[in-house]
Length: 474
Image (tube, rainbow, N blue to C red; front, side, top):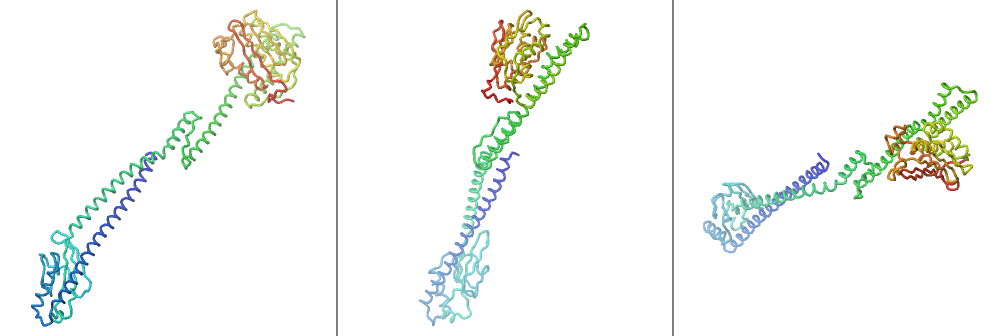
């Protein structure tokens, strides 16, 4: 059962109990008031009849009257004030009554100065009998010694009970209508009040589906609004942690793929040199040069892996220091010589700056990547140009070029413009992604200009020393 239904059910139960209790209380109070008023009116009527009866007796009675005359006078005086509800009895004898019942059978208040009351069902009717001593004057009691005089009021109060039942029915109907309206209002108000919780549930479901930017609307300042604010704060924290985990996982993936990618060019040189040492006759100087190249490439690989780990996985900035640019270009030429020779492509260098502040191993990796990519795009016999000046480096080729709509995407990890050609040449689409990462770590940027059929120019534009690149310098 949903929460709004449970809350509505509880509120409805409270409403039914409250309205029911109020209805019973009102019915009971109304019934008591009606009966009390009926009893009071009957008692007052009986007392007023007794007073009028006594006053008239005093006016007409003579002490010398006989008992028979006294009885006749009493009946005459009583009839002047009595109605169909009045009964006069003298020592158990009915002197005046228009009723078919004897009230003394139900009520005998002898010796009581205050009226007595009896209510009950007689012959299917609700009767009220009020009776009391007539309190006759002394002269009467002297003439009628030993005789008791009782005055009764006998009322049929069945209509009063019918009125009470009708009033009870009205109260029940009104209570039922109020309960019905109350249940409807409770359901509507509770559902409306708990609607923010439904929105929270929907937001939680969207977050569970992976939409971590989803937030719940805060529409009130009550506890539900506070819960929505806390939920949004939790969602923001979850989103941040997910982004951090995703970024870490992506960097780890990029590092693993990057290391694998970066091993290709130096490993090719290592394999070629090792093959030369094993299968080709070399004099002592050539063998020493081959071993030196193997050692150089191996140490560079070791340093490169460590720096890529810090750069990509640990997100640490490289330490920049003045580096001889001509020497850096020579190392790039040496690292790519075997690969370019196998593809029949020539590398030309143009150095117009002596020194730049950078990380030599990482920048060598950048330039090796760019030269390798340029050689892949070139045809046999074409030339790749590597130039350097105070703004950074540029690699130009005369190859097939890159479509304009692809330029913005070629720096995405694992994106390849021509997948069949890249796979044939051993590419996995990570080179330019790493180049961009390293350029940004130097405080610079990667700029690409290309024309299909004419060639491509890739520039690594470095920040000036005074530009505040954000990289560490020593």
